[in-house]
Length: 365
Image (cartoon, rainbow, N blue to C red; front, top):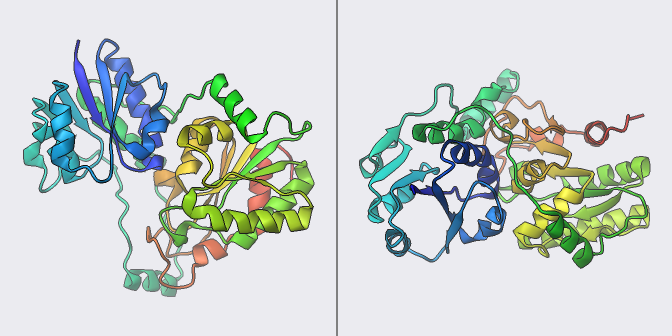
């Protein structure tokens, strides 16, 4: 049996975007044993997925040598590095894996036995300089649009093609069992919403404030959507989003008289996937939970500021609406805006509500 190791990426959104490649790899090598090496924070994402036989995790404090020592015992025949980092290639090299595959990059190509050139038409996310941003604003040009073929999903598909997998597009997909869904319904009191749909609100974005639509506009949009659909709201986020989630939940309750269910910092990654699957709509910034919501099949309305939906958006989802501003400096790919956040402040509440209603298949007034 062929023993294949895939070194996973490090962030939730990237991990979800890599699932089409993992599905294609399983399709191409049905008899192989596929093991995923993943940061431990993402372990819950990979539970019971059909494209992986085993998941090995590593902690933030483990050195590359410690990780490689554990890998060496597994005697992998092939190692495929999804990240473009030197560390991921070094892990495969130190583990003594005879066939090591990854994208060619300065400083790491010598660690690989098979380098894969960048895909034709690939576009990398490069932060724009402040000078470049200001020049774009002075010229008042149009927002930079990229082709759908530039999407990062294609990058991972290009990599697994080195192992004979088809590079043909599949939408990202994460399987969640009915048993897991039933478990979160019971744990968080979601068994009944009195015939009303559950909507999810994700106001955070770990990358930085340049990806976060203002909290007060999330509140206004949530209140308008409740009036039009009679939905009940859940608010999501990680431990670092608790204060933001509490403020938003409190403001929604003050306007509507009904407090949302605040789940920020209260779910495991696997539970988050299940709760997102329950949602009739997820309103979110560009973030890891955005990708996860689309991958479990929830309708998604996603707000984009400093980043590009053509590169990292849920554009292959069956039901996704993208809302973006029209600032000529976008996308700049910066964590924090060096000027006035016009890419996000230019997005009005009405735009988001109309997009969400279209996503939920309710006609706006």
